[in-house]
Length: 273
View 1 (spheres, rainbow, N blue to C red):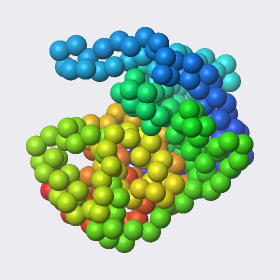
View 2 (view 1 turned 135 degrees about the vertical axis):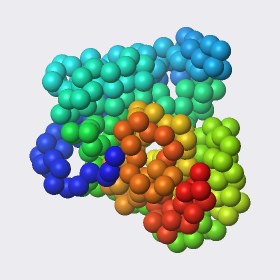
View 3 (view 1 turned 90 degrees about the vertical axis):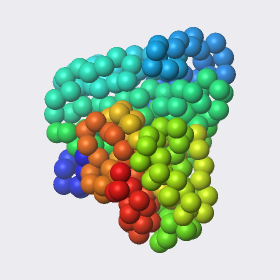
């Protein structure tokens, strides 16, 4: 999926949907926050594949978001991590990860996020990365990105990073990389100034905020990345696959960067995978 162009959807429509996106974040927060650092009803859905946690916060937040969408926009489709697909080929489709970073959530670490993206004819045009415990919503579209926090709003802008040697990079966990993927990560990490782990999609928000320069991930689903694409693009950043192409509809290997030069340097190692 490519970054949305300003001509894709009218600014009036985007403004209406942007305001509604804030409402969806508030509804999700209402379902999640009472369970954070509390009895969250943890279930392991991984089985023989390994530990894969889900909580009542994940399920309750997605139910709340879906209910509001069906009331306001009954013709819109929804793709969600917890409750699957409903009209995924509709003109407008919401893509939801109610608690991205469930492992951080159950550990009591405030780096989990609520990801809400919106596609128009298959292209992500609006997205948000919400962290309600910190009272933060990172929202983006072709017209720009902003951080809403504690009653105020400020624009988001990526920072210059012309060389990987000066970059602060991140990934959720190097164990997600297999075989040649791990070798590529190791090369990029060795060249970078500093690496941080375990932030999930909160690291994506930090690229938009200009505090992290590059994030590498693998094995992503659509709900892991759709919401971030407009946020990163609106802040002046880039989201590609490991070959430098646009991210496909089903996620996969993803690179998120604030500076094209830094990304291009990292792609030398990534393209070998």
